[in-house]
Image (cartoon, rainbow, N blue to C red; front, side, top):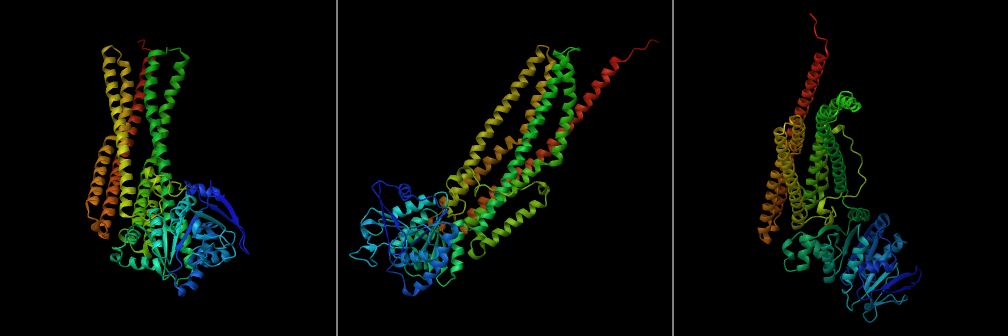
Length: 584
């Protein structure tokens, strides 16, 4: 169990203190602090010794009118080192002035802090706690830096299901090690350029990749970190907006995900409607044939059931005609394909944007490029018959659940090349392989069923039961139509080809040397080839489905025409048989 206490600072509210016990996790400490899950977490890291005095006035403004106000607006918990020194003291003052009442959590080693609320300076290597914090976690360990793992565990537990952003100002070697923790958690990192120390080392290295080759921490930060630089001379209002965007996620990217999710939902709805209609039509066709045979075999002329079946047989062609007309009028099949194509086009742009490939490499213009691409996709869609389909506002989670990637990807973090391969290519490969197995099994079962029905028809003919053969023929026809419009065999072939192309791309990337994998042109090639392979698969599917739907409509109209002719023949036969014979 953790030890829980409180401390009363002068002119401040009592602060809750929890001391970590052996084996306690971040979730255990959050529970001991009695904190509710916040929408977001803002983690501020930096140092005291390397903080330039000339930077203090500007940092005071950025932390006050920038960070503190962003914390209030987003209802975020602010986490830092908790002591009255350097950057942390500036954050404490800012929170006290601009965000009083917000949760401000400090995490520090218990053996290196002084809990005396009257002290403001370090004594015997023990730093005083900052009086403006509302909560503290005092960790195990005896040296500065021993608290880092626990601080990130606590921040991760609080950010679970939400967003976390790391702000770096000043700092030394320990700060770089802390930034690496944020990189590995895929949290966005805002570096205050001009604040000195570690922050300036990161900012300087961003413009000269070779400067980080002799520093493992800096190399990892540059290679895999989602970094944004903010000049210390920038306006606090701009800094506030940057922090809020990092906490809430890129606004342009969020809008793109919302567009994708809305079109994805419409596509799924149209697909279900189309499949259900086709299933009903096929079932009605088989039922009509079966009832006609049953009427002749089992029900006599005077049977009440014969009259019922007679009226049902009259109604079935009418119902089928209505369904065919509705399918042709509402064009759910075409709308399904068009909205699916638009949704996947938006998803491709989202991944290009997140991996920062091609035109998305330049930070100042990336959001504008994404917005223009999404506009182009949706404009093209609205010039088709899909503009008659309702596209309600999407109100679910962003990004929407999407196969295995959903468990590993928040949908907003910048993607390194390796993460792109893992999240995009591997997830698509898993989808294709799963669908290939499902479709192959379905195709084999249905083909086997056709063979079995064909064998049964042969047996019926052998035992002089030819009257039942039309039922077998109707069932085989229905299964064949189903296999035709679902494109089962062709889809398996295409999925295999696409999966092979993606495997080859992944193999090509893995075979590159580490130096080549850092080449932006190689990254562009990986992303463009991957997205073009996926686009080609989708374009081919749409063309095949359009051809299949055209054939399906012709076949349905032909069947309707045959049924009307057969009905007219039967009616004429009945009239002839029932007419009075000539007496001449």
